[in-house]
Amino acid sequence: MKNHKHFSLLQCFQPTKKAIREKALLSFCYCLALPAEVQALDFSGYSRIGLAGSAEGGTQRCFKLPGAQSKYRLGNECEEYAELIFQQPLAALDDGSSLGLYTMAQLYNEYGHELKFSDEHGFSRLSQWYLEWKNMPVLNGGNFWVGRRWYNRNDIHISDYFYWNQSGTGFGFDQVAIGDLKYSYVFSRKDNQDQEPYINRHDFNVSGFKTNPDGELTVGFNYIQKPDSRNAHSGWSAIVQHRQKEFLGLGGRNNTIALQYGRGPGTGLSYTGDPSLNNDDKSWRLVDYFDWQVTERFGGQLGVVYQKDIRPDGDDQRWLSIGVRPVYAVSEQFKLIAELGRDQVKAPGGTRKLTKFTIAPTWSPSGPGFWTRPEIRFYYTYAAWNEAAQRAATAMDPDSALSATGPFGSDRNGANFGVQIEHWWK
Image (cartoon, rainbow, N blue to C red):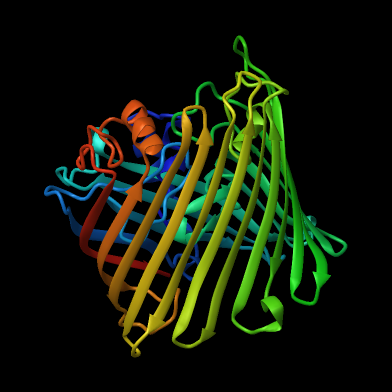
């Protein structure tokens, strides 16, 4: 669970305050009427808070290359962030299926600004709310859901990069078993808070193709309908993804590789892309990431992304990203974490380059594993970038860390330091 600010869906519809109160009261009364055994409210979530500064003075400013779709996150997150998730069982039916209500509040506030979780420097949203009917016999044990949901979100953890994401407001049939395979379908209208206009999107997935005893293949197809606006087009994208447990026959090592291709608005590659693009606009992406925990004290993750965007107007772009985060536990509760990330974007105006390195001595009271939380990290981050990256940042985001008008001025390197607490719980 990570920084998900790009996929908030609050503005899909905006009910009145009166309607919200009425729905909340109705839900509360309904829950009171349920048998006691289904009233247990499950609470889970994620949070990170920190205190950080820049070597040039002032607050921390994050390093991200213009044109790259992600950044390496260790010691490079510039916000307070939380997700508060509530799951309320509503009914357990005689056929073995169950009904539940799921909601999630999302809080975000940039460093260096008053902690209000609002205005242009922050937000607070109800980012998920949906009803789900699980384990339905009529769907061969599959599920049906309706509402606003973060769904089928596949990511590289160290860069917080959600390369395959079918979140949206709509409904879906999830993991319907037919033979040895499982089928899923989602209809949604809005997957991004800034998406205009509303666009119908259809996502189809088939999983369960066994390639070997510990490997499984999933295929997906995404169709984006033409919206009711001028100079708009339909589009599509497809993905083939393979997950391999016990990679190379060694325990504690897992590898995921995915190949994606899209045209027109489908160049968003699982998201709804620009509807003004047509069938001549193409994008493809290769993703590979490798997780390891070879001993109790040594784990980590390695991620690679390559994407090529082909545009008839000449605005082609190629993005290459390679990063690694090894974690070594000196003791049961003390880790030494490092992260090295390299992004490169070849675009009109030159090839932009950014290299970022972080070292983070970390207290981990729950144990030494890579995924163990909470963690309290003390970190130092150094980054260097080239002139093309600085020119692009100055033109596209004048206040950013890489810009000539940003906190590091004409320098093409900079450093941040700070402390961060990260935790997720169930």
